[in-house]
Length: 126
Ligand SMILES: [Zn+2]
Image 1 (cartoon, helix red, strand yellow):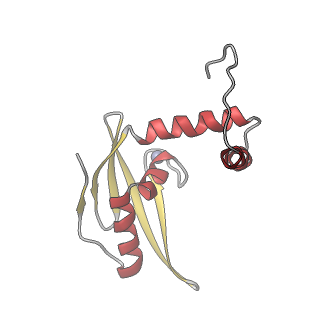
Image 2 (tube, helix red, strand yellow):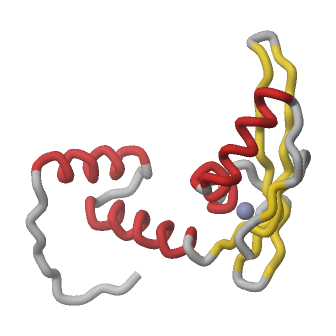
């Protein structure tokens, strides 16, 4: 992380509260670390492209790498549940998973899968 001479910005109280909550959620020490994390995530999100969504996985492109995110549908006591798993990061909590819920086209397909159990392939924007 770049360090240097500190500059001050003024933010309205509601934004101050938002950043304070983020600091807590992201489990970071300072307000500026919370902002830095959000900025980093925002930049990363915009480097990811949606290639295709199929009924059991999503194909993304990130830094010239094809990323597969698998869709797992589970029938539980409290109804149907949808989990995502990133094959690249071997994780269910990474920037690719967050991207899938953040991208409107993918989110719509995921909600359709959750409701009907399947979706027709959804082409991405690339
Ligand atoms: Zn990932």
